[in-house]
Amino acid sequence: MKLNYSEPKFYTGGVNIKGWSKLTRKQQKEALSKDWYVYFSYRDKDSNKLKRQSPIKGGVNRFKTKNERLMFMKLIKRSLVKFLENGYVPNKDNSQLYVPSKEPAQETTAPETILEKLQEETPKTETQPKPSPTPALPVTVDEKSMSAEEAFDFGLKIKKQTLSPNSYVGYVSPVRQFQKWLNEKEIKDISKINKKTVVEYLNSVLERTSARTRNNARTTLSSIFTTLEDNEIIDDNFILKINVLPTKPERNKTFTPVQESKLETYMTDNDPLLLSFVRFLSLNFLRPIEVCRLKIKDVDVSDKKIYVKAKNKKVKIKIIPEILIDLLPDFSGLESEHYLFTPHQIGGIWDIPEMDKRNYFSKRFKKVKDHFQLGREYGLYSYRHTYITKLYREMRKELSENETKSKLLGITGHNTLIALEKYLRDIDAELPADYSEFLQTSVTDKTQND
Image 1: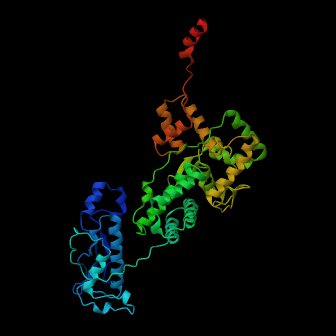
Image 2: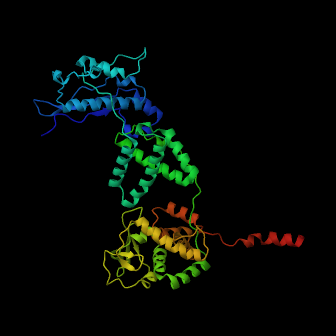
Image 3: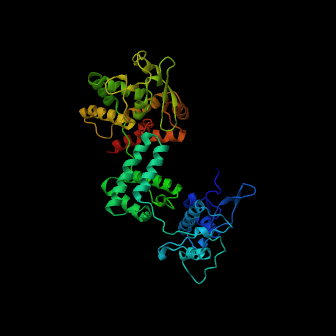
């Protein structure tokens, strides 16, 4: 059977309340200058259609801020829903709903005094106007705030349904760490958490770790708080107003030709499987985690195509260069659903999270670079930087700078030319020609004078 009423909704001055923080001060002031109210529809007995009822204000417009108005309207909505569920009918005798409680302190009085109860929650000033007449509705004002633990569990549950497993994992630890810190500070309710609280926590993260880790924690918590705001658990995501600290990016260095040669010789003798992983990463210009995602079915040797699940799009198609085709083993006897790289062989079952796979090969390569005493600035990502640099410089011998970047854009997988140019600058792919001839005269003259 159809319900006889619609879910009560809020009118908030003609603006989307979820985007309140994005409004200008003028837009916010204009929205607050209008009347806010709760509205709903009730099924008409004659037409059997939902009919809009008179708006319910209850003195809400005496409040001067968005948060105060929204909190008060939530009380009205909760009470309205409760009484609609119990059989409340607009413009009818609802006296049967007003049953006195055995405890005088909690007694619900006649309908004409309900508006007075609403007004008890309103700050009284001499200049306040009289509230507009509204339908008499019983209101329960003992709203219980959700605990921080319940709110975060809810936020993580929503994230788990909307994110990939790999992305979801990155939310759990920062949220739990923040929750642990709140427990130490004895902050239990989500309503007690404000901007000052989060800033204090982020400062503690900064003291323990780095600005980058602090910024990452801020981003994660902000995303969770946005979810809570969207579901009306909190009024506003104030974390968006917390500044991001400047950081110095750490990027893996490119290998020199000598380093690359020594590493390849060592892996040929001691870890040929890791060398195959490195070659697949290098010659296809992939990221380590993208190689870990590959299955046998993703590598079409006959058509020289590889189907990669990337971070910036669902699936991207890349060609397999002839130089790699000659190095690939025979895949004909392998199961198509098996992963291309496993700890012990090419093609096999390896059902662990992608991040763990990437970390496994990173640690495996660390043993190799430790043999040559290479620091933390070198890693598997260094191969991607090295080969893009080599390709760029070889192409620049025959093509102009713009032509080279245009061709390289389709090879590296960058989304835009601007992103590619920034990447090339970061890895110092473009180096100037020898400028000695411009200084030769100056140096010669100085030598003669000496």
